[in-house]
Amino acid sequence: MKTFKRYLSNPYLALFLGMFFMTLGSAKWTLFIGPWLGLAFFLYFMRMVKIWKAIVFGFLGFYVSGLVGIYEVFPAPLPILLILLLIISAMGLLPYIIDRLSNARERGFLGTLIFPAAFVVMEYLNTLDRGEVWSSIANTQYQVPAIQQIASVFGIWGISFLIAWFASLVNWMAAQQWKWARIRTGGIIAGTVYFVVLAFGILRVSLVDYDESETVKIAGVTLDNTNVTETIYHDEFGKTITIKPDASQTSPELQEANRAMLPFIEDPFAEKFKNARKALNAHLDLLFNKTIQMADQGAKIIVWSEAIGFIINSQEEGVIERAKAMAKEKQIYLFMSLGVVNPGPYNPERLLLVNKTITLTPEGEVANVYLKSNPVPFAEQEYGSDDIIPAINTPYGRLSPVICYDADFPHFLKQTGKIGTDILLVPSGDWKAIDPYHAYMSSLRGIENGMSVIRPVSRATSIATDPYGTLLGSTDFYSSKEKTLMVNVPIHGINTIYNRIGDLLPFSAVVFIAYILIEMLLKIFRKKIPNKQKRKVVGV
Image 1 (cartoon, rainbow, N blue to C red):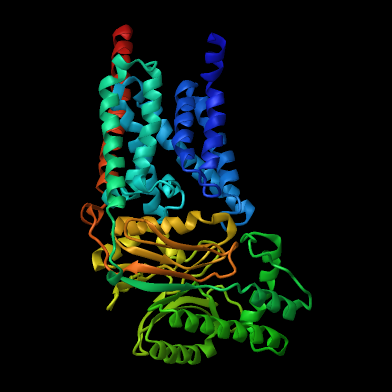
Image 2: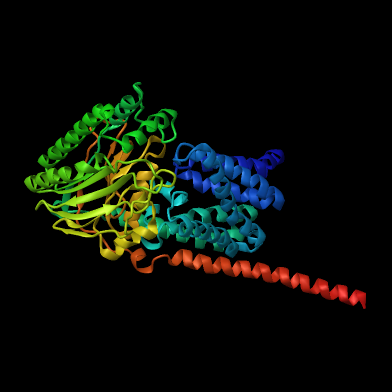
């Protein structure tokens, strides 16, 4: 029995289990329990081995599990991904190192707060640098709505804190050999906190009830436009290529197909691209027909998925006029998502394509033109956005459009809470490897800022959620012939505590960790002074 316990307590077994569970909880698989267990095992390993082993093997553990978990998820070539993972893995070690050097294990129950505070600080500072929250473990909890509700109070930082604190608590209790007399007070306090969080979340979700008169029917329209890309390739090279619908952004066939895109952008009116232009026009007609169909089925607001209206800039005026007439005839609000090609010789300084939404009213007027504010690194250019999220007043609430990656920036989306957005419209484009992880990230912005979120997406799951993150409807791009999302959405948003207190939790964590670091430095300084004094006395 003792031998069995010794094997179970082996720190390298804990490292392996940490890697395993963190991989399961990654963006690719998103098993919600993964981060809860993964962090606990990683923390045990980091505390139980020599510091140099903790750093070396801990880094390797983060690197390997990170590579497996985000390969094909992050739209970057493998060499760039390998380099980025070096930085990500090194940053991921920091909370564990702070926990180790501060002797959190020896500080009793209060010491359990060091690791989660450091973890939140790391995630928060990361958003100040990059802005987006792709790597936050809070994104993995969409299967547990009760836990997600704490985001309405503390933002996603509240979710991350709870997961990291659980890891610290489990290690503290294990160090006390799970003896009730030793862990009673701390266990009751922690248990009460988790009980209150869960009770708050369950009540918040279960008490939601909407009257049908307070909802509006919204349609999210997307189409499979793979044939357009294949036709452009055939026109350019005279060869046929087949792109699987679930191809990743870094797949060989998509990379090969994209070789034809630059010649097309440079001169889309060349004779060789006549079939491509026909395919574009046919696709546009299909998009308009699907929009009319949704309007006839009762949709009052219709949103196209990201850049699904792929056109040449000389077509834009005519397409807008056509859409104006349709919006007026069908009495709808139409959020057109356009990818507008700017023809001309390639120049890295020149904007080749504009990613935008154009909002049309039932009066047939343009209410807003919004340019994507946060282009995807390595994949998109800066579009010249003013970084202001619009608020469009309608009989169906205040509507705000952003585009795909924009919704991954919580600091940017705070604007919606300030302008009173009721419904956030997020036309998007994804790929299989990030489905449905990316879709549910946007629902957290809805919980934080008290608004419904409609996210029609090409090549992934389209979803609609209410201000509590409750799923109102979804459509799987890969398993359903009908890719259009049609849902009844509440027209009123809600006020949240997070709208008022903002990032109080990460600010508090920063202060606490700063105190711990200063305390550590003072201890080192005090140890050096007596040693110098002793050497002086010996010398005398």
